[in-house]
Image: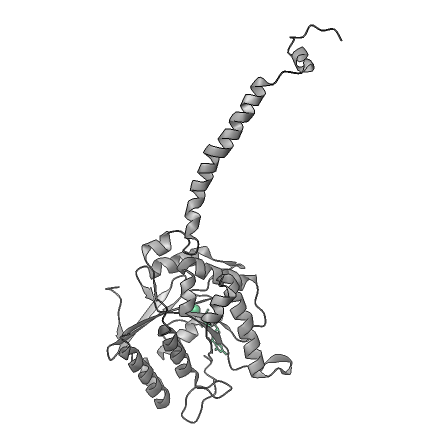
Length: 312
Ligand code: GDP
Ligand code: MG
C-alpha cells in the first residue's frame, strides 16, 4: 500500500455544519476505542448506487457514477485522512454479468484486497426494487464464499433511492420493512446463516438518498422522508458495527487462495474418495473377478467356444 496516496479529507468540510459536527464526534469516539483506520468495502450488483454512496460518504466526487452500467473492471480504493484518522473506502465493480455472478470480477476484487483488512462491508441495493430473486442469493453466496460467513457480522445492508413514494398506497415504513425483510432473508439464505445465529447478530439496514434532489432540513442536511439526516445516520451505524465485538476480516493469501472458508472440511473429500476406491471398490472388483473365475460355464457358452461335443 506504500504507493497508495492518502489525501487530506477535505470533502468532510463540504458537509453542513450540523453533519460535520456529528461526523467528527463519531470519529472521535472511534479514536477513543483505538480505531484510527477504517476500511469499508462496498459491494453489490451493478447500477444500485455503490459509487454514488462512496462519493456521498467522502463528500467529494471521487469515483465515477454511471447510469448505464459502464463501470471500470477494477476496484478503486479512496483514502482520506483527518486529524490522525484514516478512512479507506473501496468501490467495486458490479458482481453480475449476463444474469450470473461474474467470477472473474470477484477474483479481481479478491486480489485487490490481498493483505487489506475489511472493517465493514456495505452491501448495497436499491430500496425501490420490488423483488429479490436467486441472483441476489448468488451474489450474497459469492461474497460469503470469498470472505467467509464472518463478513456478515461486519456487514450493513444499504438501500439507495430512499426518497421514494411506495407503490399501491403502501405506507413508507411498511414498504421499507417489507423490502428489508425480503433482502435480509436472501442474505440469510445466501450466507447460510442459521435463523438463530441471524437473530443473535442482526444485520442493520440503512437508507441512503444519493440524489442531488434529496430533501434537506433547516440545517441543510440531506434527509430521509422521515426527517433523519442520513449521512450521520449511516456513519453512526458503521461505527456501531465496528464496535459490535466481531472480528474484522483480514484478506490474506490463505483466504483468497485456500479452500472456500466456509467448508474447510471439504478438504477431506478427496482423501475419503481415495480411501473408498482402494478399500471398497478394489475389494468388490477383486471379489467379482474371483467369482467369474470360479463360475462354471453354461453349456451354450462352451458350445460357442467349440468345447462342447454334445448333440442338440
Ligand atoms: P453503481 O453501478 O452501483 O456504482 O451505481 P452508480 O453509483 O453508478 O449509480 C447508478 C445510477 O443510479 C446513476 O445514474 C446514479 O446517479 C443513480 N443513483 C445512485 N444512487 C441513487 C440514489 O440514492 N437516488 C437516486 N435517485 N439515484 C441514484
Ligand atoms: Mg460503480
